[in-house]
Length: 186
Length: 118
Image (cartoon, rainbow over all chains, first blue to last red; front, side, top):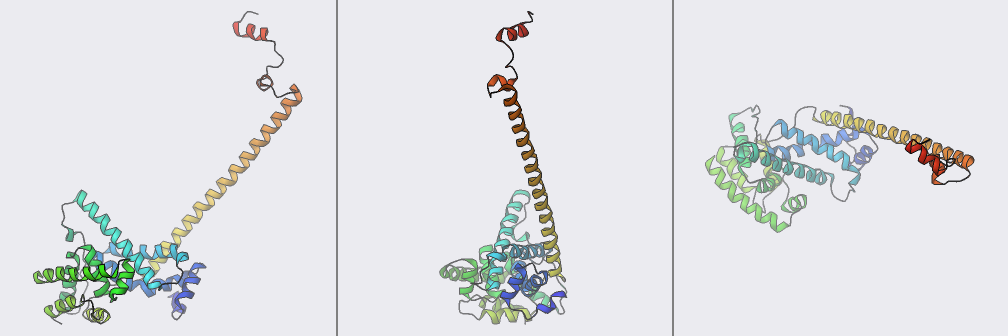
C-alpha cells in the first residue's frame, strides 16, 4: 500500500499532511481507525453492506471537518463522535422508513451476514452478541457497544456520547437489566 | 468459551467498574470482531477524491459564470453611457421627451399622428 511510509507518523502530522491535500496521509488515518469505526457502526447496525457505507461516510465527514479538529481531544475520540452521530442518524432514518413502509419489527431492521468462523463455538458466540445487541433499545445499544466492543471507560463513554456521567451509569445498569432478560431467551 | 460463559462476560462488561478493555479483548479472541471489507481505505479515498474533483468542476463552472456575468454587465453599462452621451449631444438635455425621441414634435402633431387627422 502507498501509505506504508506513514506507518510511524504521529497523528498530528498525519492530520496536518491531510489538510495539505496529502491523500496517502489520510489513507493512513483511515487504516488506523477503520477497525474502531467498524466496531461502532457494525455493532449498532449489524454486519451488513449498509454498515460499510456508513463507515465510508464517517471518514468522508472526517475529511471535510478535519480543519475544525484542534487537537484538544484525541483524534480517535473525534472520529468516534462522528461515527456515533452518523449511526444514530441512520437508525432514526431506518425507523422512520420502516414505520412508514413496512410492518417489520424493530430488531428485523438490521441485517447480519454470517461470516465464516473456524469453529462452531465462535460462530455461536458471535451470533449471541449480535442478536443481543440488536434487540436492545438503541440508546442502550450505543452504551453497550462503547463499553463491551470498544472497551471505553464510563467517563470516556460519557465524553464521546456528550452525556453526563450519571446518565451513562444509569443507562448502563438499565442496559444490563435489559440484556439479562434478552440473553435468557437466547 | 461456551454459551453461558459468553453471556456472563457480556453482562459483566456492563458493570461500572469492569475492565472494559479486558472484556472487549476476550470477546475479540472468541471471534467477536468487526471489520470492513478489504481495500476499505482505497474505497474511501476513491469516493472522497472523485467527489472533490466533481466539486472542483462545479466551482470552476460558477467562476466562469461569474466572469461572463461581469463582462456582459460591463458591456451593458458601457452601452448605456454611450447612449446617454449621444442623447445629450443630440438633444442638449436629459428631458423625458428626449429619452422618448419626441423632442422635435409639437403636441399638435402628436395628436394628429394618434388620431389620423393629418
